[in-house]
Amino acid sequence: MKMRLAASLVVVIIAVLLVLALSGAFEKRAEVSTMTVSENQVVYEEVAPIGDLDFKELKAYVKEETADADGVKLIRIAKKDGNAYVRTAYEDMAAYSRFTGYEGFMGTVADARRAGYDFDTVFSVVKDGAMGDKAKGKTVKKEDEAKVLIIRENGRFVVDGDIIYVSSENMSVIDGSTVEVTQSEGEEDATVLSYIVYE
Image (cartoon, rainbow, N blue to C red; front, side):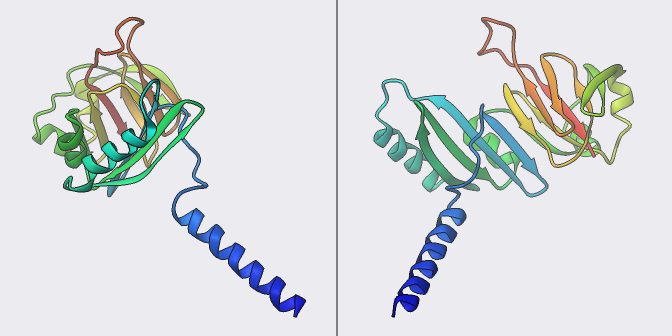
């Protein structure tokens, strides 16, 4: 009898852990607001101080805003240490731009040129996860088959490949697939068009 009870308890515990894992309860929270892009999806986790906001009201608002949005799915909203963590998935960059109002593009360099992006900025070569020599936009434009994430937003961006070029302005490379775009002190609301080219 005791063995059956213990076996049943183990099954229940495993089931609960499985449900929690599938719901994202064990997923690591981002340290700062982070966009992660893959071939088929954009996932954005916003990290923001709650301040005087009522978390229940914030949660209800976020659920309402995302419920009927085309191509948008709320994955999780949680709070910890005075911060709200809102993780949302978008079916593509177009859905992200529609929902947030931030300019963005994801595709190949050739696709970006056809969409009107001129790559008219100073780039840096990225090698071994660090920014190196400067490169001209006309050099980067020749990388037709390389992928590119173009965004007018500040934050951390993670791509599903190895970064080979980044636009130099306000950009820092964290590792081979992660960059951070930040503005000068006192200009947090300012943005520049940032290019992340990867393969």
